[in-house]
Amino acid sequence: MFGRRRLLAGAAGAAVAGALGTRFAQAQATYSGYVMAYFTESPTMAAANYGLHLAVSSDGLDWMPLNQNNPVVTPTAGTGGLRDPFIMRLQNGRFVVIATDLKGTDWSQQNQYVHVWDSVDLRTFTGYRRVKLHSMATHSWAPEAFWDPSRNQYAIIYSAVSGGHDVIMVNYTTDFVNVGAAQVFYDPGHATIDGNMVTVNGVNYLYVKNNTNSTLVGTRSTSLNPGSFTAYKTGISPGRGVEAPQIVKSLTQNRWYMWGDTWSPNGRFFCWQITDLAGGNWTQLGDRDYTQPLNSKHLGITPITAAEMSGLTARWGTPAWRRVKSYNFPDRYVRHASNVGRIDAYPFDPYQDQLWKLVPGLADSSGVSFESVNFPGSYLRHSDFAVRLAANDGSSTFRADATFRQVPGFADASWTSFRSFNYPERYLRHYSSVLRIDPISSSSSTVDKQDATFRVTY
Image (spheres, rainbow, N blue to C red):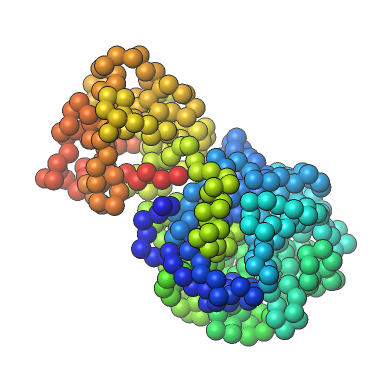
């Protein structure tokens, strides 16, 4: 439903629970997907919203935002906003949500508190509170949590300044209401933030951001004791600044994925994969392999059951809009700009320009027409074979020009090509980033076939 990947979707039960360091009582549950927590920003901050957002995925790679990409709950105390939300499944199978208490990007704020909610099913959120982690003149950034069986307690890890630079701190708790004293959990001697913990075969892996060069670092320890972690993999980078590592395991095979976020408001995610976590040799995936939620920032991912996924989509609804990704430029999406149909690199503003209602074809209901979300009543149509956004004038010519038939993609049959209704030998394609309709056939060049192949996603 949310992706056609062959990589995930099925069971993992106790193995995934252990991998996430949450050996809870329901470890025999069967998971069939994931939920992602995030907040939103965009290049001009037009999409800035500091409430808790949720998306779901059946494969952990392609994500569908819930609640029309609006927040499902928003803090009412402290700064009135959150960043860096994280969802943890507790020992009893219920959830706790923790997040940084920060609205916006004023990094100078010194906030000793984090936001906390309880939830049975992520459809309702109760017990909202702010929990104080320390009394130091510093922040409490990017809180996450894991179960420490040796202490029979949960560990809340987060970033705070100690010894003149950011380190990973820890507080222990049984209820996310009362917490023990803050301790330094990991300090490599330089600024380090954004800790994420997984446990595999008795080895604990803590991935962090080296805040001096904006790369990701893997550390490990055979215990969960503060101060016991040492680095074994450094310098993980997509070639630009990255932070917020988040590691999840495939639900069907021996494969791990690590997500990372750009540090700027651009909201661009990257993803790597690996089969041997101990080796630390991550391979970066391409944009064709995954699709992040629109405008999402600093993700947190948790496995969920089929019933939980159904409950989430029933409660929060599926998007009324879709996005359309280019096959050979998969970092680009179909949009309108000054009424010209084109593809541009994500992210961009106005972000609504890439949102489409794929409605029954105006000329033939078995086809499809692209109605703009931010200009209702306007559609992509071709005129002299160029594709533009135009208001529906009600004419039969307009209806025909704005109607396409979805067929298997020329470059990849699991993707889509769009055949013109009234010029059936011509297909929607991009050329120098601009959309048009051109003749495409099985004998066309590889480039032409790729230009005419798209993926309808969220």
